[in-house]
Amino acid sequence: MDLTQRAYCDRILRVNLSTGSIETTPLPANVMPLILGGKGLGAWLLCTEQPAGVDPLSAENRMIFHNGPLTGTTAPTAGRFGVTTKSPATGTYFDGYCGGYWGNMLKYAGYDALVLTGAAQNPVMLVIDGDWVEIRPAENLWGKTISTATKQIKDELGHDWQSLVIGPPGEAQRNLAGIFNESRALARGGVGAVMGSKNLKAIAVRGKGGVRVHDKRQYERALQLSFRAVRMSGPISMLRKEGTANILEVVNAMGALPTRNFQQGQFEKSDEISGTAFRQHNWEKDYACFGCPIGCSKWTTPLEDGKVIEGPEYESIYALGSNCAIGSRETIIRLNWLCDEYGLDTISVGGVIGFVMEMFERGIVGADTLDGISPSWGNAEAAIALVEKMARGEGCGEWLAQGVASIAKRYPAAKAFAMHVKGLEMPAYHPNAAKGTALAYAISERGACHLRGAPLGELFSGAADPLVIEGKPQLFRDHQADKAVWDSACLCAFPGYGMTLKELWQLVKAATGFDYPKVADLERIGERISTLARLFNVREGFSRAADTLPARNLIQPMTVGSAGGQVVDLEPMLDEYYRIMGWDANGVPTPERLKELGILDTPGAFKNGE
Image (cartoon, rainbow, N blue to C red; front, side):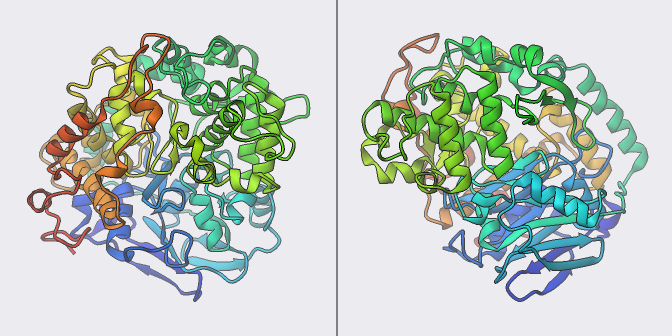
């Protein structure tokens, strides 16, 4: 099978940072129709190539950067790429995705994936210019912030290059560290720490190639239908106007906006930090990633000292705002700037600050423990001081930057309100107010996540009552399978507010030429990929016991709003979801189900595949 005629480069770039070896290998041709690319390719490579029990911060842990068959094409939002690895924050399978321009540049350089192994003895930068690949010393970049290192790379190599960079927290291997492509981030799960453990400061890439789809005429027709669906979408028009923050007031009205470390679901200052307020007072211009017809990102006007950010996004506003009882837009912008400048995940940083604020209010920690800082609810100066500590690795910042789960081990009295799943801090939807989303948080292979199939429509579309558990396992399963396909094709989730899986199916068929007679064939690919990720976690020791939520969600009723009195009755939903997926009562995929999906006993191996 000639994959270069099917929207693929048919090349995996493999770099061993310990030995300095650089080689390319072909894609597994017989396997690609079963996994598509992107998330599927990352899951397959991690499952088949990485031994069980590898320490996430060891040289043996793989970092797999991957794009999909639609990356670099003219499809809507075709600049996406991802990374798959084992997370130091959770110990689980982990994949994250990013917009910007790095992903299409890797594709134009001629690679479907970059697999990194080993660890350099000294700081290095990987430089990829088509067929020319070099591991270059980078002591001059070590210790630099994201913007400084990015500028230095562009000054050295040229402005037609794209780079991925970690900041000082990544170098120090902190769990809250992310990887940044200029203003865009692969931020969650400590992926920046994995990169830092390899002494890899940056990956710079330039590509001058292109992408050839399999059937150009069919593809152009599918493209027209896809863009029409995007243009006609009401939710997408709101994304253009107010970015992801357009939903904040709705989520607050539904009682699902996490406030004061998830003690409440409504914030009394929500109107001051809404998308409408940011549009009126703080946003200066719009920004779009490669191939994006939406432009959901916004650049702020400068603060008094000139600080500017792209954003803040809804998740950052919740995490650094309502979750900490902070109603100042300027404070949220400054906190967001610190995270972006030093390379930290805003969601997890906000989760830590809210957690520490509640610990302080309850007397579990004091100012003497926090380098003289007194983080009471809504204390903007204290929040900024704590984030500065985490960013620079000073004093209490060293252990705060390891995340909520690590802090809870240090202070067991706070475990009941440590808001994380599997070690990953929780996103911006209160589980007690949205039961399908609660199940998604508990099940997601990477820990608490709203991007692995959470049926957020239960909050926005009225298609399902968010406060009931009936039907939510099937709803989540459907969304999970669909999202795995989107991430394998490597398109942003936002066109999905207009496009359906049918439009994506038409694009994928035309681009790849693979024999997918029905839309359901893509759903089966999504189930297969989700099962691969589950098998990896099972192999690493995770099972039903890890598919849970914090005590605050399971036994502490909400006190205000439309979700007042609600807790999450999780166990019946787990039972039903496992049944639908063909897993046993402990959450392990059964041999019969693996056979149906064409997966052999060895995770990642397929019948009739390689």
